[in-house]
Image (tube, rainbow, N blue to C red; front, side, top):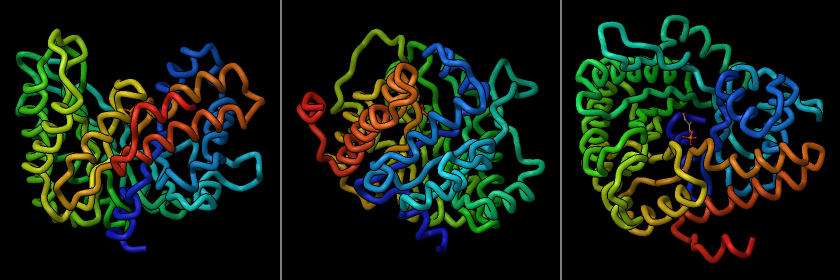
Length: 336
Ligand code: 13P
């Protein structure tokens, strides 16, 4: 499949991406929160339970994996990428090596992992991956993000994207403006606009084929400690306006991160964005926590009852699939 077809498949209506690419460190935090030991076996057991759910066929277009998972064999005897492909979804791979302190800055972060990226991409392709993810993070404060952090992260994202396309895979461009802090929704709008704009300047400079990319942004929402509350309608209107103003037309679509929103908030906001979408862009999800939280809690209590865990995951995936078509409503949650 060419990269434009892969990108279109990733953001196809009714489906979205499962971000299950938590590093071992992040997985340790997630499993600790449900009192489960973070062993390789447990990580595989939880993830394999999700990847063999029915909703993989109906509502999941792709799964972002961590390096460890891409190499694992499922209990069915086939590899994890094969298990995902069998359900009709695409395996993807997180290729950045995490956000580290940016030298010369006051505690801002730069995402690393470019040095050996070219040979790693060749190997990931052979292992079955067809798209990749690189996440840059930007914090908001009176002084952040600085021009230094915006420019250096946009540059790294563009260099990553170019190498990924060279390996015939689709790069997910993930510039995440974090929810931490008490900033207003308008501050989030302004910062996200500047960040996305700078990313596309760099992507164009590095000759990235935009029709073979997917944008994974944050929604436009106030900081989690912001006193003034906003409506779903305002979030959707400002998110759509920000993306319309800053995304080149060639990009097939957007797969939002959830970034600390609750499961229902993330579903409701995506649904509202799709209700008012008057663009040719497809808007869907690439959620980590907002797809896995309830399933993880159920799994922690009933590890051996796969179907119980899958029922919870299937419901969340279905709800988000509906919201990618603006067909979700609150009442569908209550029936579950
Ligand atoms: P969240 O949806 O939990 O923000 O995770 C998405 C992701 O892939 C972060 O890089």
